[in-house]
Picture 1 (spheres, one colour):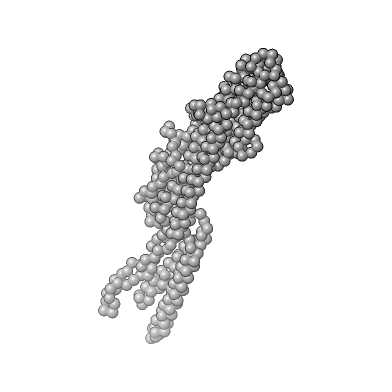
Picture 2 (cartoon, helix red, strand yellow):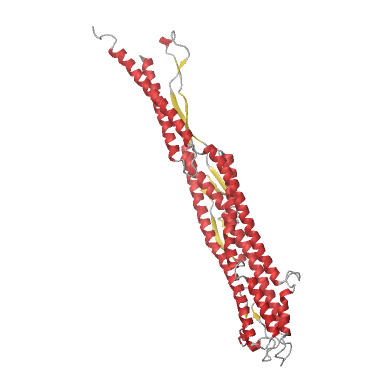
Length: 467
């Protein structure tokens, strides 16, 4: 009699275990397209056996089984892939962000359009050549003044736009700093929940998935490094500085850097510099403080040499009204350069080498010949070639960022597919597992029915009690 009752328990354990396995399969199927979800599996083991009761030792040997139980809900995970994947998506995000900023710079420079600065330089030199052929022409003088103003406007606009792009990155940096701090706090909170669940022997699989998603986001933002402790808590660091230890976080903050044009810089709350090894933050800083600064420096150098060289010659010239000693340009760099307002009196433009020589255009010709003068880079490059090289450098930097982003994203994609083949949900596999669990459930239910019939025979069909 006790054997039949034990069999009911065995059948029940099978029904309950297979039911739980089916629930796990349902959960997998429901999250087949959920980003960051790791496949789960109900791991079953035999129940704890017991020895045969003394009165049955003559007809039974060994120990009797007690059925099946779900030992744990196992989460598929490959930590090695996670480490490499985070590294690659961090690098890809860095170069993608740098590419985005440099695309804005490329649009500002606009050298592939009619508004390019090279065209404006050519028109400026051409205006002096034309004036040298007929220095008494008011039309030629007016044309020269217009081309000069267009060149000045081009330099001003580019310098101003580059400065604006640099300052716009402050907004992007602040947003990412806030996001990094927020995600670090989320990781710390999940650390507590995960360790609590693990401490009672359960599997916090969905919490681990959520934490992994946040950790990947931190890697994209700032190249976070992660190590998992024995307690299950994640230790997060960025650039060698701890950001999350257990339930504690170490935040970062922005401040105005007087040594960098009062733009935002980032530091840890303890005052140490924030130095991300990769990620979007580094991409923004690279573009803002290196690539754009290089473009601005070259633009300012071009403007300074243009101002100096043209003024040195023009100040020796004479206008048709005998005005002399006048600077053609005012200012010191690309942002401040302007045409001397005195020259709005067209007769004051110095084209002649002496007074009372309205037909002399020798000074205008000397200025025009600056077109081919090697006055840049220590006397090795012309102004046009120097600026062409500056634009080429921008193109190279943009192309390099684009290639790096593409390469790193391809590697990350390959690693992601490898990881997905291990941790991802296969609907075909889940369908097969579902059929297996369903059949096991049905078999356990039939076993329960058979035992019920046996008990009915024993209780109701073996004689009459009380006679």
